[in-house]
Length: 101
Image (cartoon, rainbow, N blue to C red):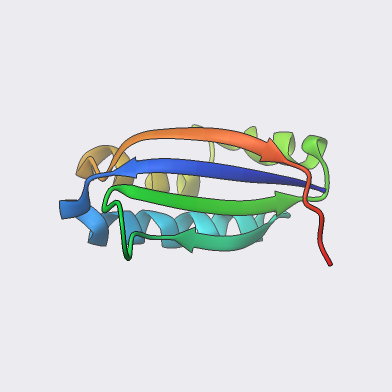
C-alpha cells in the first residue's frame, strides 16, 4: 500500500471553493481504486494550510489513476474548480508507506 500526502497552501478567503474541490477529489479517488482518508482543513493555527491523505494498493495502481489526469472529463472538471477559483496557492505531494495498527 502507498499513501499520498498532499500538503496545500490555500487562500483562506476561498475555503468554500477548496471544500468543493476536495469533495470532488474524494469521490474520484474512491471511484478509481483508491481509499481517500479525507481532507484536513484549517481550524486552529495557520489558516492557509490543508492536507489530503489517500491510499492505493500499490504505486502501479496510483499511476493508473494518474493517467486519467487531463483526459477524464470528471478530473478536468475537478481541476477547473481549483484553477478558476484560485483556492490552491501551492501544493506538495509525497508518498508514504503507512504503518497501521
